[in-house]
Image (cartoon, rainbow, N blue to C red; front, side):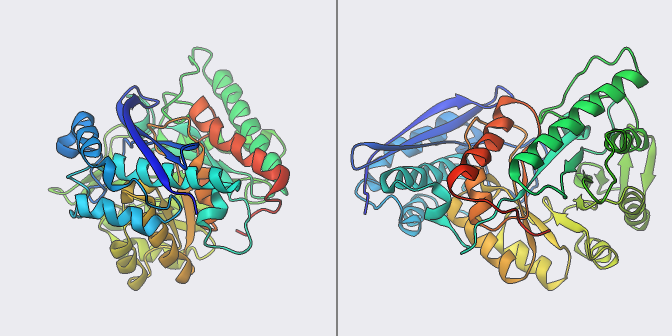
Amino acid sequence: MPKISSVRGRILYNSRGAKTIEVDVISDKEHMGRACAPSGASVGKYEAQSFADNKAEKSLQVLQKNIKRFIGLESDDLKSIQGVIREIDDTSNYSKIGGAVAYAVTIASMDSAARACGEPMFKIISQTRNPRFPFPLGNILGGGAHAGPGTPDIQEILICSVGAKSVREAIETNFAVHKELGRVLQEKDPRFTKGRGDEGGWAPQMDNEEALEVSARACESLGYTLGKEVALGVDFASSTQWDEKKKKYVYDRAGFENTPDEQVDFAAGIIKKYKLIYAEDAVHEEAFADMARLAKKFPRVLITGDDLTVTNPKILKKAVSKKSCSGVILKVNQAGSLYDALEFARIATQNKIGIITSHRSGESVDHQISHIGIATGSKMLKVGVLGGERIAKLNELVRLSEDHVKSMASL
C-alpha cells in the first residue's frame, strides 16, 4: 500500500480572504494529495477550534514540528493517521493543533492514497456499496451572518432539484432558478445591485416573508411546481437569533421576538406554506426537544441539525435518543478530522438519519467534499450555487458521472 513520504503545510486564504491551512501529502515520493481547510461564519460553540491559540501561524508551527510522525504511515490508513494527530493533540476541540490542520492532513492523505491507487477518493473512504449522487442543495437567497444589513434574518433560502434524474440536470436546474430569482428581484426593485452573499445567494434588502415569496415565485415562473420538480429549503440559523438572557429569538432586522413555542410555530408555518423539503436549525443549538417536535410534525421533511449536532458523534447520539432530527449536516471541519466526520456519518446511517454533506461559507476551491458526500451515502450536497469555490464541487460531480456514479440518491 502507498506510504507517506512527505508532508508540507502552508498558510493560504479562503473565499472570504481569511487565513487558513493547506497541506500537501505525497505518497511513495510521487502521488500528491492536497487539501485546504474551510471556515464558517455561523459557528456552533461545540465546533472544533480552527487554530491553536486562534492563530493559523501557531497551527502551522505545530504541524511542522511533528511532520516526521506521519512519514512512513500508509496514506490510506486513516485510523493510524488520526492516531498520530491525537498523540499530538488530545483535546476535545483540537485546540493544540487546530482543526484546520486535522482537516487538511486527513483529507490530503486520502487524496494522495486515491491518486496512488488510481481510484477516485470516494472509493478509498466509502461507507456504502451502492454509490449515488447526493442532490445538490444551493443557496439562492442569503441573509443573516452570510449577508449584510437589510437582508433577511433567515440565513439561507435554498433550492433542490428533487425531480432531477441526473446530477447534471440537478445542477442546471439549480442554476436556472438562481438566475430567474435574480431577474425577479431586479423586476421588483430596479435599483437592486445584484449583490450576493458568501455562498452565491442573492442578498436583497427585504424581510423574511418577501424573500420566501420571491424565491417561490422564481420557481413557479419557470414552470416548476414546488415539491415536485424542485423544492425549497431554509437554513434558519436560529442560534444567531437566540438571546439567552431573554430566552427569546430576537429578529432584529424584521423587528419581532419569538418565545420558544412561537419559534416552533414560526418555523412550522414556513415549512408548511412553502412546502419545504429541508429545514435546518429551526431552533437554537441546545433546543433538542423543540427540534423533536418539528421532526415529529413533518416526517417527510429533512428537519436538520447543524449547530445542534456540529458533526459531533457524542452530540448526535443525544439527538438520536431524543428523536430531534431526521437529517444532519456533515461538515468535516466542524468535527476536526475526516476520521471524526466518518464516525459521525456511520452513526447517522445506523439510525436512519439523512446526511447532508456541506461546504462552509469561507471555502477553498477543493472538490473533496463531493467525494465525501458520495462516500457517506449523503442525501444532499450543500455547496452553494455560484462562485468558483462552489462550482468546483459541482464540476467534480459531473466528472464522476462520466465513469463512476450514475444514479441519484433517494430522498
